[in-house]
Image (cartoon, rainbow, N blue to C red; front, side, top):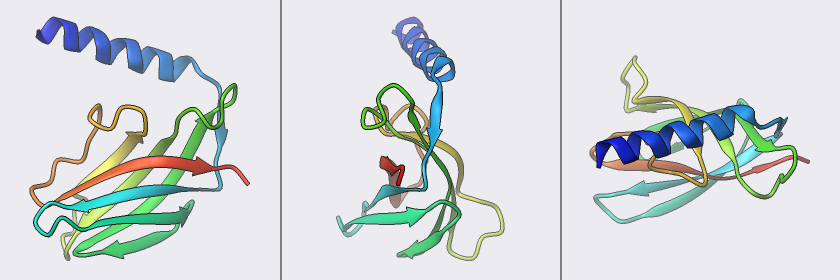
Length: 118
């Protein structure tokens, strides 16, 4: 099973790297508080931050495929938990594959929904 998973991850990563992308002006992220069950959607501009619960989330970049801008979203985010100096997560979130590079946090899940290009 690990071999199949590694193949799928490699194929998705290869497809993502081969696509030309458009830079978005902002994006929408969804946050789930796994303790309370509360779901929040954040509409952020690139380089904008917002706080949800004990998280501070910054949308560093948001990109969409040039050939199909509504087909997928790739959001680069930095997430800080409480007053920690080190980020709880820093990296790319892929809307069509939220588990591929997910934030591993015991209380919160964060994933990308879409990017805006205007």
